[in-house]
Structure formats: structure tokens, C-alpha cells
Length: 423
Length: 180
Image 1 (spheres, each protein chain N blue to C red):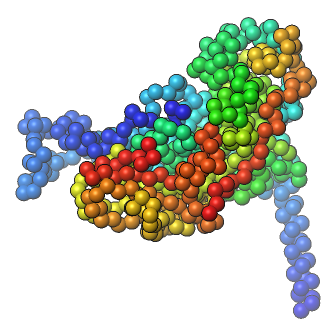
Image 2: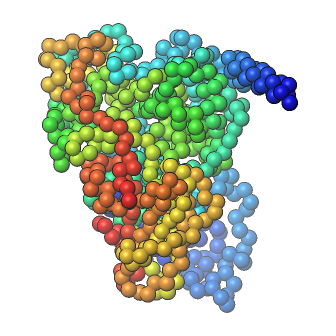
């Protein structure tokens, strides 16, 4: 499926800096003398004093809402240029360009089913009805009056990636439909208690205020465990692409269930069997049966550096780093192999290791300049071990489509070039 | 000691009673009551058994006209697909290496067709079709799949009565399915 990989959209990181060094004065908006625009790179290097120390910089407050350096303009969402349409489509986080575990809001992956609605929060309401004592409607300000909480969790699209070729070239092509943020909102449990659940309440049907009126059924256990109604992401209000002004958030569940632009919660005895949980987001097995209501994203990891599209500059020391996550809880261990899976060693995990959040792992590596295959595998606190693609295919077949959490190896050539070892 | 224990239990019961009382009153007193009319206007969820399907009906022949105007440009004249999903055919392919997932071959419940068309289609103008038009288009798509006759007129009862061929092929989530 064309939306899962993007062979034309290569990482531009290696060429980006070379391009930008020459003509940056204009891009940066800094006024410089005519001579500066043709300054050679070495003019700013020792022993010379760099030009940006010889004139004052941009005035304070020149950007009321800050944006990245123009030298980083290549670090953008990875959007396929060959999709049939862009109303129900996805864009990917450039994982190989990022450090740490928090995804900047402007780079958070997107998956929309009916485009991005432009919602005036003053005219948005959340309706809570069905098997409750008191059907209620809330404004966004109402919901902000409840006791709030902030938690760091990943969000991942269920189809990240598919099972059939062509496989992506970069980490973003492969698994860029995962991102991680600090979410602030109110526990869904509190809001449900406000309306009073009836004893026969077993499911909550969530509906978005987008043009797809996207609808998913959530088991009541999850609603009462750790589900949130979220209004802020990484400290600021949700971006429109992430559900402004209100979204559901279900830690560890496939992303589409964390319904964006949330407008309605319908408490019921059984799932609504919406199109998105029958015709889509069901997992087709080789025998023709299909798994439904497959919610959890299982443990997974990917090396983001060095990764596909990048190039090791020279033999010697290189840190191997990447991200691991599990919908079932905390990452317990990440093992890395640098010899095509013959041996594995524990990577160091960046603290704090959070439940249902991205976990950064690192391993020091001396590259001897010879061809190598490097890969990581995650083990979560349940003891579950991230499987190989072959193991998954043997059970699920190529038409399963969703929930592919395979180990993904990278091949390092003697030139230092890194490519997808399974492609 | 016994007195203390008894007293503790009494306090616990009193607290429990208080919290039940508080819940009956809304713990925080936030939000306002949703009226029946507001709920009726927004609740467009259709159950798999057809519950909450509205009054009205639509015929295959009327559905053919609506489909040609509203749907065919993306889904093809005969539901063969294009910019939008393929809607017809594929029965018998689901368990093969090249499954063709359509309404007729894959969808488990016919009322979901009404639910989805009304809420999300046509993509450029969702929630613009009348209930009669949605019944009619649903009937036409089911007819394309050989699941209702060319003279069928569907309403809440008859749409819910359509048995979809793939209904019994859905199973629970058996993961973790790779163990070591």
C-alpha cells in the first residue's frame, strides 16, 4: 500500500547542511554586507571571528511564535507525494532527525480520515450520553475546570508499517507513524463519574467532529483505567492536526481510537461496530478470518541513528541510538546486535523509563569499516520480546496489514551508507 | 478495641454513603444537562442490529440515481473503486492470497453501511444526504453485491435483516501470537 512507504521521500539530512551553508544570510533574515553573502565557510572558522559575532542579531521578540533555525528546514514531516488523495491520509515524523523521546508538536505524525477541521472552541461541545444517570454537555472551559493531569505517552498508528513490499528506506518511512508527547487533560474516569455510569455500561463510543465523524468503541475498562480527555500537548493547546480543541487519548492503544476533535461519548452495552472497527482496523489472517477489536500496540523498537538514508563518515566510534515502546507498559530492556543477529547486547536506557512512552536507548559502537547489519529488539515489562518480520509473517501473512512490530535491521556498507536490510 | 473497630466500620460506612450521595449529585457539578432533543440531533450511531436507524426508506432504483451523482466519480460506476474504496465484488477472495475487501465480501453488518454513508459520505459533503437517499444508496450498493434484489426497498427493518456473507468470520484478538 503506497501510504505505508515512501521511496521517493529520502532523508535530506546529509545534503541539507551543504546546501545551506552558502546562502543562509537571506534565509536567516539577517542583514549583512554584500561581502558576507559570498563568504567562504572557512571565514567563520578558527582562527577567524565568525561574522555573526560582529553585528547584533535579530531583535528580541522578532518571532512571537518561535520556529526552528532555517538551517533545520529539512526537518519536516515525511509526506508521500504519490497518494491518491490527501483527505484520508497520513504524514510521518522524521524519527531519524530527532533526539530524546518528545516529538515537537510541528513534527507529530498525522493520520486524518476526513481532513483537519477548523474548530472554533467556543462553538465546540462534548456530549456525554447513553447509559449514564445524567446526560451532560461540556464546553472546553468546563473540561478545564476538572482536576487536570499531565502524562507522557506515545501515540502510534496501527499500520506502522504494513507487511508487504516495498519497505521504506528510512526510519521515518518505516515507522514514522509513532510520536510521543506530554498530554494534559482530565481523566476520562472523572468525567464519566460526573454523569454517573449505569451498571450495564460496557463500552463508550467516541465520535470526532471532523468530516469523517470518526467513530470507535472503547471498552469501559480502558475508559476507567488510564484514558484521558486531552486539551494540551507539550504544554500548549493541541494543534488542529492533533484534535484541537479536545481529543480522547488512550495510552498504548492504536492511534485512531484516540479520537480527535472529540464531540461525543455514547455509553453503551456493546460496540457500535462502526466502519472503522469492521471494514478497517481489523487484521485479516491467511485463513480468511479477521481479528477485530485488536487495540494494543505491542513492544517495538527501531534504531534511528545510524539508520536508512544516513551515512557513517568514517570508521571508529559511533553511538547507536533509537527508540523503543510498548502499549503494554514499560520497556524493560532493549538489545542491540551489530553482527546480523548472531549476538545481542543490552543497550543503555535513558531514564526515566515511562509506561506507554517512547524510551531512548543507546549503545556505544566501534565500527571497523566492514559491512555490518545492526538491529534492535525491545522487551517490555510483561516479558514480551519484539519478533522478527519472518516470525510475524509466518503467523499473520502479508494481508494482516496492521500491528506490524517487527525488528527492523539496517545494513551498513563498507562505504558507510546505511540502507534497509530487508528491502 | 472492639469499640474502636466498630466505630471504624461505622465511619467507613458513613463515608461510603456520603460518596454515593455525592456521585448521585455529580461530584464536581461541572457541565450542564444534555436535552433529549440535543442528543437526538447528534446521536447518529447505528447499532449492528439496526438500532437507531431512522424512519424512511429507499429503493435500489433511486439509489442508482443518487450513486451516479454523488458516489460514482470516486467509487466507480459499478462500485469497482477508484479514488475511493472498491465497494462491490470480491466474495470468495477473503481467504486467498489476494483478498478483495468490499462491502459485499468483508463488511459484517449491513446497518453499518447506513451509519457510515450518513456520517462520512460523500467525502466532499458529509451529512448532506437525506435519510431516504442514504437508504437508497445503501440498497444500491447491496444490490451491486448481489445481496438484495433490483426491486428492493430498504427501511430500518429490512436493512437490518440483510445477512452479510462475511459476518461470522471475525474473531477476537489472539495476540501475543508470536511467543518465544
